[in-house]
Length: 370
Image (cartoon, rainbow, N blue to C red; front, side, top):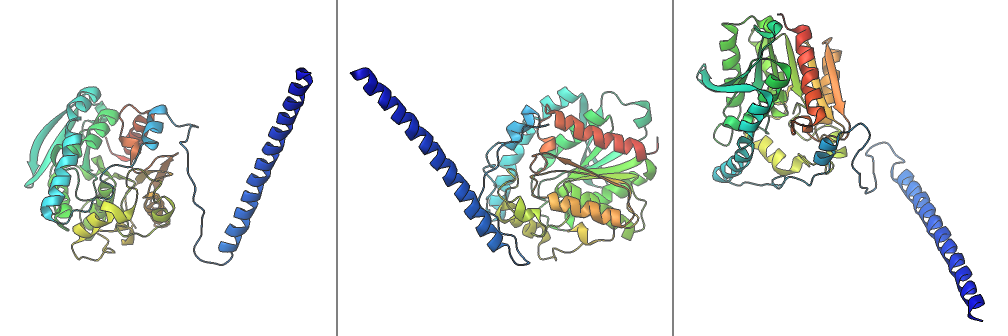
């Protein structure tokens, strides 16, 4: 008697599960239909776009496991730092610098470069020299301006990008340890960079020189060319402003679309915007030497730009690329799937890192005189 009873229970359970599945599917479909209707209504007029809350998983297609680990990492603990005094800024700057400096010896050994301190025009610099330099690069020289929101990366903490460019590209690099806030706001950083540029021009043919840097360094690369034009100085043969902070204000589509998605910068309203105001020190954020996107790009040297699809500065990068092209400048743009701000240079072992620096090196090889 119990066997038929068990069979009835099994059939009833199967029917119930099927019905439950159908209801769940119907609910999902209804939820999407409701969402589609509400979004259509919310976006019916010209103006702001309204998007629903959503989560984005890690990209897998064409993204290395090393890069996936960075893309999926939590926000950095300092993303919303709000130092109120110069002492608090310096404590944060020093704490972050120590983390970067600790990895410098291993990075130098891995990429086969040596680093020497020097002063050029009174500005503290580092000379980064690969152990092996190809014949075509022996008279070429790259000038590096580091990133860090105009506040981070003092001293050796500025070196990882310069070391990777020297190691992967086989170029000798001068990295400028420019002055920064809180003690030295605008225009100290740019003044230092230009002093080095003028000094380098005394002994080197400008057609064998290039300038590169990422984020703040990308903005400074562009600003250096603008100022060199204004001062009637020779220009570099090529430049590589990586994901440049070309508009220091919160202007540009990706400041909104990639806010809280970029797991490096996260939001302009955290430490980043505070650093922008600290650096500008009352100067207009639309000053072309601070926000180079407002400058005249006509006559700029060939330029290669790099960014990622989750980069808070993606709009800065594509706006710069488009303005260069409209000015008749040769300009390449590399955008990496899934990457947040400057993640193409955070892990020397990620294939994308070697790829990015190799692309820049090939671009320089194309335009720098031997």
